Every structure is written in structure tokens, then in C-alpha cells.
Image (cartoon, rainbow, N blue to C red; front, side, top):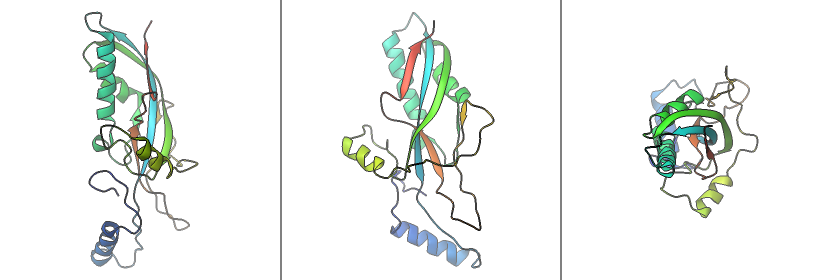
Length: 185
């Protein structure tokens, strides 16, 4: 669960309390319900691009970075939605001035319960520090991927033994160093 603006909800939030009461009142009273805020996991990538010589390479790179940031932002993603090299390749390939692309790697970076790190146009040091203060040290137990070029997001699974972790959302890390764009040779 997330607030409308992408912020994490603290356990004592009135929104969580109201949702829990509503679910208990209108749901099956024999099923225990727990409501938690979400976890955000950032990912990075490395890709080589072949640029159209009719376009300015720095301008194309800037457009690729902006397009990736928008496409893989909290507002554009769903909880439990994975990320694959094929999807990232298609996003980059659609940018004017890109002739070819080879996404070499996608990888997870950090998982935090701190809310949507990139919900504003720029990430301040204070906001980043607050987000990092809520890091999940060992990350999540993601479902195995059938392919090394895909990141599967964690989805909660009911168990009689333990409470599941909150749902996960995968977003592009806002750090300028998280996306490495090389030149295809």
C-alpha cells in the first residue's frame, strides 16, 4: 500500500487503520488481515548504443535517460511488475537518434521501506538519507527468474508460519551513475 503521492505510510497511519477496519467490517471475519506499506527496490543498467550520426549524441543520451526515468518511475510502475532486458531495450530503441541498442546488464541496487525516492524532480540529500535509513539489509526473497536478464519483483505470499513482506515496486535508481550508456562498436 502506498499513499497517493507515492510516500510510504507509517504503521500508525490513519489511512492504514481505516483500510484495516473497512476490510475487517466487509470481509471474512475469520481471515486475519495485515496491512503494510510497500517496499521500493531500485535498479540500474548498462547498455551500449549505436547513435544516428544525424543526431547529437549528447542530446540523444539525455533523451534516453529522461525516457528511462519516466518509464521506470513509481508513477508508471505496478507492484509486482518485473523488469527485463527486452523491455528496457524497447524503451531505448524507441528514442529518436538510436539506431541499435545492446542492454548488457540490469541489476538491483537497494530495497527500502522509505517510500518513493524519486517522487519529485530532484532527490535531495536529506530525502536520500531518509530513504536509505529504511533499507532492508538483505533485500527480498524474489521469485527465481527463468532468465538472467530479468528481475522478478517480490509479491507477498500467504503463509501459516510468518507474515509476508510488503509488495515490492521496481524503479530506476535516480542516481546519475545507475545508468551507464556506452557506445556500440
